[in-house]
Image (tube, rainbow, N blue to C red):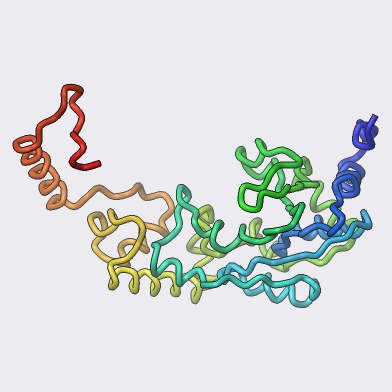
Length: 280
């Protein structure tokens, strides 16, 4: 019987500490730290377990300034991993991230830990259906190493009970009604008006980046130039969160129809009705 089998019926705290001790790599853990409540709990658990670890914060360039100041003050040993380019640099070349295309996570948040055996995260199953499907231990697709989620089964209530019991400092934004304090411009942030009022410079920088992208005719989604009147129209749609992706302008729909008609006139389809290798 393994050490983990003996934990049946034990508390979440006991199980988390046992997991940390069981999986500890010789080199120590790479602890992914964001300054949020879950990573604060994770950091404290690693200390309580007595395991070797080093904590790292992936600088997104759009995190709340209050959280950054909190980390500088309360967690001075956390290492800040700066990206090659800012969020705005990417927006000016790729466009804004959406819920279906969150390139921002790959570029700014999930690049750390390469070359390390195990990355510790504060992922919890309660946060989303996709996270609920993740195991306690899994292989990291980016690094090829393992990822360990010691508080995967903790509830938000248990997280806060632990923070208060341990008297752990946490960002003041939680006390102001902010339930999530990650990236200010996250596509999953629905309280956009409140966020813009609190951090106007961050949002305005996104608008400015879109103006640059539009002027240079860049962006991964070329359809935006057929569906929006300009960068401000695109920005307003992105901020709305609920507006559907607009249809193409009439002139583009008509041009597409004429092209299809012309294609039928001069391109022969094969017996299966497929286009020949001309366009492959």
